Structure formats: structure tokens, C-alpha cells
Length: 168
Image (cartoon, rainbow, N blue to C red):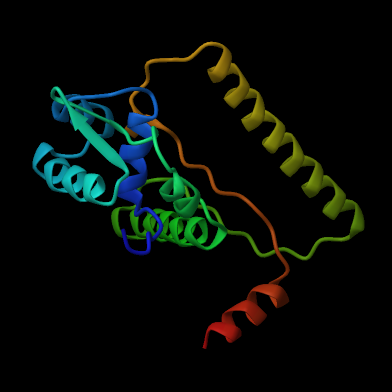
């Protein structure tokens, strides 16, 4: 098998759905919100990459032999590409369809305000960790497509400018 690249957003949602157990094409469609025709092509491609297997009408993750594909799609640079894809989609959703929630603030913060911001960000991270822990203890049968994507963070304008200029 050749070089394995990172998963695209649509591939990632299929992998996340199948991580909860094997599914038929119709069940995958119901769980992910993707059309069966798209999933039919996508699952075939993912099976050719060695990510999925198809047995007795069910798709499942290919985890019973070398899992280099799993390590590869979770490499930092591949996750970076996926994050960019998510952020771009969130921006497009917000500005094209005026839906979704996207807030960007540019603020001058003093030391005390910086500490308050960092405290709020830490509280947010703790909240998300508590939710993840609760789902592990008491799994819910929620559809994968209903997961919330929440993006947060903070940076200095100068750091973003440097990064942007490096890309040019």
C-alpha cells in the first residue's frame, strides 16, 4: 500500500461513526447525515486504503492488523489539515449562509484581563473534558452528525502575522 494521507472531513465522520460499531450503508447515512450514494463511493475508497472492511452487509474499522493508517491520519500535520478544513467550513457557513456561530475579537488586554481570559479558556477546557468523561461513563446513542464543533483559542496578532507571512 502507498503513502497514506490524512483523512478528509467526510472520511473522519465515517471513521467516528464506525468507531461506535459496524453499520450498514443505510445506518451510516442515518448516523452521518451523508447520502448513501456518496457513502457508497467513499466507503469503497476507504476500504481500498485499508481503513474499512465490509462483511455480511456491515462496514467496520479495519483494526485487526497493522494500524499504520490510524497512526498516519492522526499525525500532527494531518490533523492540522483537518482543522483548517473545519475552520474554513465554519467560516463559509457563517458568512455564506449567515448561520452557525463564529466570533472573532481583537482586543488589547492588560495583565489582569489576560489572566481572566486564560481562566475562562481553562474553565472551557475543563467543561469539555467533563462532557467527554461523562459520555465515556454513560454513552449516548446520538448521531455522529449532531456532534458540536467548538473552536477556541487566542494568539497575539503579531504571531498570526508572522505565520501568515511565512506562508507567502
